[in-house]
Image 1 (cartoon, rainbow, N blue to C red):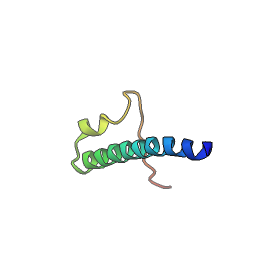
Image 2 (cartoon, helix red, strand yellow; image 1 turned 90 degrees about the vertical axis):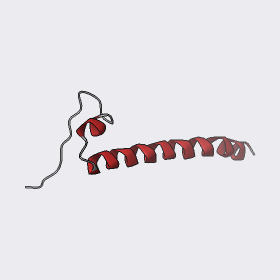
Image 3 (cartoon, rainbow, N blue to C red; image 1 turned 45 degrees about the vertical axis):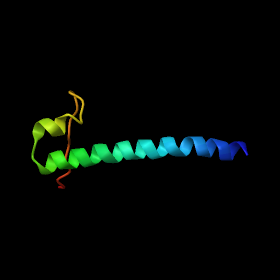
Image 4 (cartoon, rainbow, N blue to C red; image 1 turned 180 degrees about the vertical axis):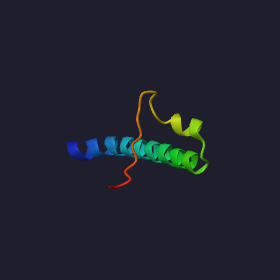
Amino acid sequence: MLALDLLKTVRPVVRRIRMEIRLALMELCAAFNAHDLDRIMEHFSKDCTLEMPWGD
């Protein structure tokens, strides 16, 4: 029974975290699609680097 109670407690937290991640990714994609560098950079720390794989 303890495991079931724990699951009932954890499940809503996991759902909320997943929704927050999904919303952040949707906002980031919208910023990229709008070519809005300021909006894009809001999702990154000031000292980040973005490396895009271009192949050999």
